Image 1 (cartoon, rainbow, N blue to C red):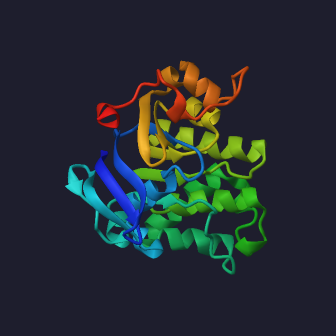
Image 2: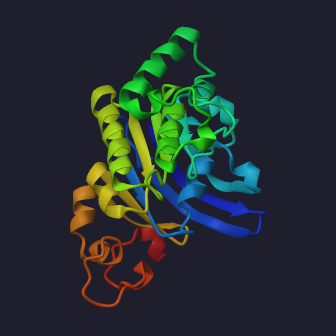
Length: 262
């Protein structure tokens, strides 16, 4: 469904944020993209969504394909209309609008009847924000705002939903609610999900496949179950180490892609 082929991204045409990244997200799957702060995860999502220009970022080489069609360089609106939507880190709600007005903004490409159906779906997934649908979004708790942000993306009826750090700063109960909704949507409607998440344990429990990115490069990928059992992943990301934490780049037996060794 989604394929990135040897993507290189620069900011201000000087700072390389992503180098030769390739990854695939098959239709109907949940794929996790893991990495530390500054590894390039959010940059990749912005490149897919077509919003790099807002931060003077640019795809210098490579391609992004959706269903075999090149979308790198396409306008964000056109990408949304193709069914690819993102929940950004930090939620980015319209703070002065109500909950329902924020949700309806997410369905701007849909008909009135589709928007009404979308509201029913979102409120069914998140009853908590239905109770607050007339409240101003800026006064909600962080967890409620995240539910609204996810719901706003769902209003666009995404074929592929991208989530950037959906658990960041949230209470465990709220995180459980959001991830249960993601899993339910994937199981019942085969919605494809690309998940960027620093909580590696949670991400690898949710996803079927994962990629690990370090310093703008993919250093490891594989089925989520295999990544969970990898000693180096356990040490660096899952906190199962009895010794000193190491950088992934310092792990000599770490499996890297052939181009990483060239």
